[in-house]
Length: 591
Image 1: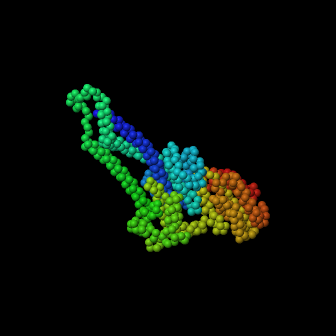
Image 2: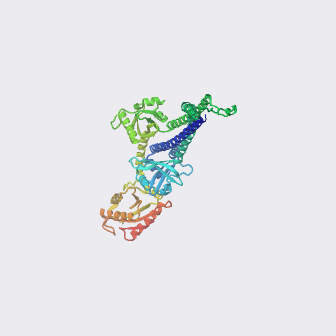
Image 3: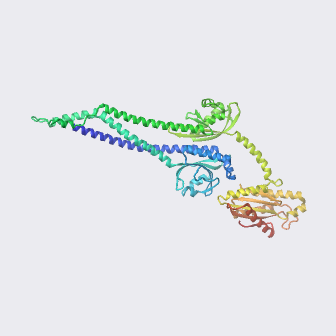
């Protein structure tokens, strides 16, 4: 019995040691795999959310917000939607920003405790810290960048994802940003380790029970019997008697043999604990599925889901409302009936749809125009964004459909309004911008440049002895002279953002954003030369035989305290100095 008991304890200890070693190794491997999966899941979720923001916003809308800096009703609705997106996905921040020199200008920010205001400037070093130069210049060039993990005292450790928001011409206007707290990912990893920590003792109990219930009967009993027989053979000698148990008291000290009923009770308790864990896991899975279903059904966008076999398998409630269906089954069965047989480019609708879904599975996403039609046959132009989502069970593609009918109507209305606005902001005689446009545009330019402290140049231009020209050649020829000078000035100012306006009478003004003293002097010399080379005859001029101009120039680094009159007054002083010095020249003085 002593030999049997010793073997039993040794086998039990060896079994527990093996179980602990295997469990520790399994915990390490599973935790690492789980961390990678959670990291990838959050990255995919962040990319999908950022791409959803790019579907809701276009570059022109971002430009309008940054130009006006007005938080209108649509702006507040968009901000509320971004905050809902942030809360439902567990993100730390969702925001929209435009990279500029030495930093970024914010358009939207969902941080409720310390929000960044519309148009507020933050330096790159303050936001990110040193060492992100290449990343910053990639954003400035409008390139798509990979997610990056950053750490700062202000923002913490974040997984940052950027998606570009483009204009109609394809240029990048801003980036939709999603910040995911790495602490959240680490927390989920701890949950997994805690679950494994609960499972390991249960495994030990199960293996120990199996050891007692099976191994002791299959392995230990034959071995102990053989050991007893060998021991009896070795210890027995002729004429010697075997020692016997002296009394009943010694026999009573032997450990009782466990009954089979006790073993079954232990197994029953172990299996009950395992069933409880499985039920808890199933409840968590059901909760996650309900959360996913809630996100799909509550999104305001028309959304549909494709599986890896290119079959449409689900849709949002917004899709049913858009097309007028009562249930999802009818929508899924009649999906291809919601498109004409051929698309505007001549391709069959079904063939093009499957090709676009395939491209999204291969490239990760695809954006294209699509012509839908309502059940009554009414055409509906749309923009479709396909986004691939990778998860542990495979891949799916989610499609977001944007109804462009109201946008087309708005484009026509905007075009009509722009045509009417042109009449209000252009000078009828010269075709240049008028004084009203100059006043509004200069104020906005100063406000925009003051965020980064960029320079601004301004010129006041006056035609020399224009009164004598009118007296000599008449007002009709005077108007023709103004048109020719205006055409020369307009053709000479070719850089995007620069503009020429008629200030009044024979005076003109030129505005040069992002231009310092050197550039302003070069432009002034060019304008003087181009007007002289036009050779408009002026017999009564005391300066030359041709029409000439005098120019006053000023530049300065813009500040938020600057006023348009500051630049106009300084340039007008320099124009007066040019006239005093003999005309047909320019004078410069910085602001």
